[in-house]
Length: 197
Image (tube, rainbow, N blue to C red; front, top):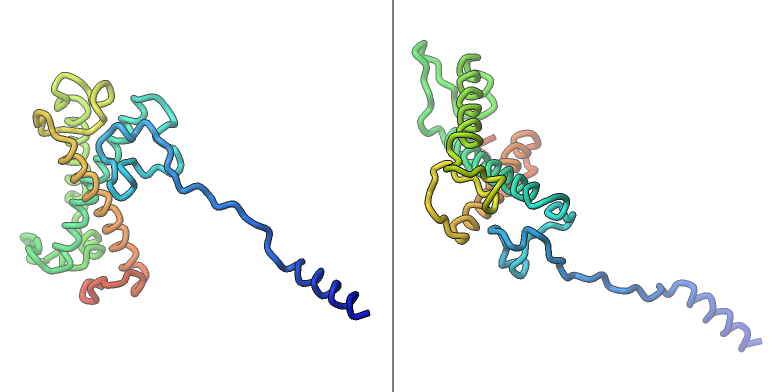
């Protein structure tokens, strides 16, 4: 009887023992983007692309992805600096009527006259047209190179400089998004200056 009780107890306990699980592989697979600037030392000299987006299409598609990333990086860097500049109250724009845009970026956008917003859109359009047509130095970035948009037509930009621009731009994209979130949900972003809210 004692043996039967011990066997039942052992059988019951073994029902709660987890099955052995195999550990997932943490190796990164090579992608087309690994030959381009923007590789990360932190990831062993490869590009962080968990969804495999770099291998979705042709090399032209990859160059288009990179061009979009570079443009978004540049806009995010300008936006992050503009947000910090505005929130700190530096160089407030005062219109001829005497009213200022203020130090709250959302209120400043709200107070910007309609013609000011039209000027911003026209300027962005001109920059986009110039980078897509005129400032290609004879070959469009989708047809040759690594997709790195070079509107200033610098000669032989080293990969190290491209890496710096991409990493700073990626950080700026995270930064401006955190600024948006901090203004929408106070307290959601640690170390966000309270005077900016």
